[in-house]
Image (cartoon, rainbow over all chains, first blue to last red; front, side, top):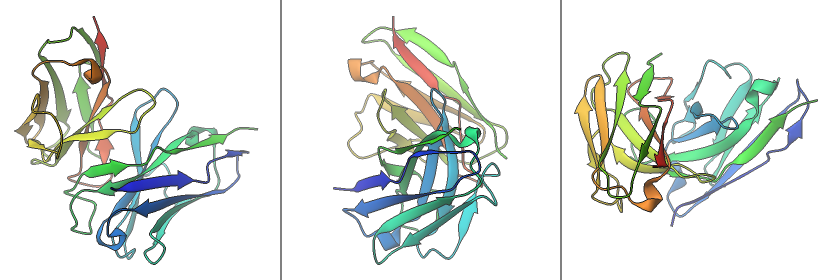
Length: 124
Length: 107
């Protein structure tokens, strides 16, 4: 059974930093691209970032480009999201999502498993 | 960026009703369109991928159609667990984008 468990969410002040983790199990982590998706309170889904299976290519939404960094450690089956220069607009539940097709790429694909998410609150 | 527009944004229906949700892309996305259901307080669940392929374990009452810029998700007979919010998503080009969601409520 696929399991994705996020951690690292917290209350942080504007301008602060946070590192989220997503521990994966139940599948061959190194074969799948992974993404982070966020959902602000009462709002819809917003894709944040993706990383291909090898970690050699990363992609970001314009809203986080230059501030967030996605990475992965295939030896630890763990996905990360380093978030810097946080603003109130970054307040959301952040979830990791696994692609469904083991192409290693995130385009032309879908998210077949999601974690429950970790809450990031940016406030003074 | 490709904009995804869902309609309606909300609807009221009864158990047993047939429901159709529409998703339109601002440019052609071929068949790279997925549908998810999100129950309150829960993670989204994949229903349909590649416009019309049902994800494993998804009940047959869910079906998807379309290609290019116009897509639909149909639920043939609404069940109590289907009262939720539905999202479409395009994975044709980066950034990946979701529709704004359609909330299906009990009439």
